[in-house]
Length: 344
Image (tube, rainbow, N blue to C red; front, side):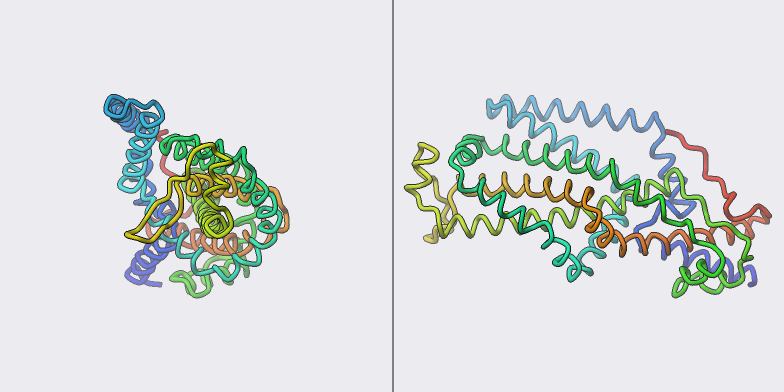
């Protein structure tokens, strides 16, 4: 392979990695993200977020006179600062784009996986839905407090995922060498280079930011599925409640007259039904998250497709690092590639 051909393969490989939600595998992106995670910059971002959140909470609290609204405003501002910094400086968008594309592209696999958890979930949650105490609790919340509760459930779900997902990465890349490496790199920009790589070359060590990239891919892919399930549960209960629970029943449960929402002259759903449906949908999402990370059958079937993609990515990374070492005139084995020193 000539120098020009190698440079072209490297450029194509870097584009392939970014398109597949792996920007941290690319050396230039890796260095930029590592710089963005420098302690000094993170302290400035956190300080800015906390300051803006405090100002926003104080302004909303003074304007509305409600503590839950102030807390929600602070969380929204902090989330907006974190999301903005992640999208602009941490190259999160390619990861989100690939995970969403992968999830929606494999919806046919979602149904059989979800149906394993959905019957028991619906049985349990439907019992809660026709429980007067649940309606009293959910309807008594003001709207900001409801969304704070939803965010709390979402945070707990993320904690569960982050605690268990690293286990799924232990097996990724262990067989990315010899004939297996050529198989993994088939139909990728490094297919030809993989065939020329010495059989003794070890698979690339995935640590630091590349490993964080793989974790984020799994996290976002699972989170999108949980979100779809929660939306489906919300839709089910809004329709079920609209058809089966009348205004008199709602009043007897909550002690207050029903507050329906209208679209023109069309009666939609009541505020109480909306809040109960949102509350139970968020709870269902948390339940499904716990089920997903504890049920071995679900984990095996769901993660098989995703980890197959990640194994291919590690194979491509192995050849990519070998090509970069060759381009730099470095005779070190591909597995000895060293990441830039972490700044965080």
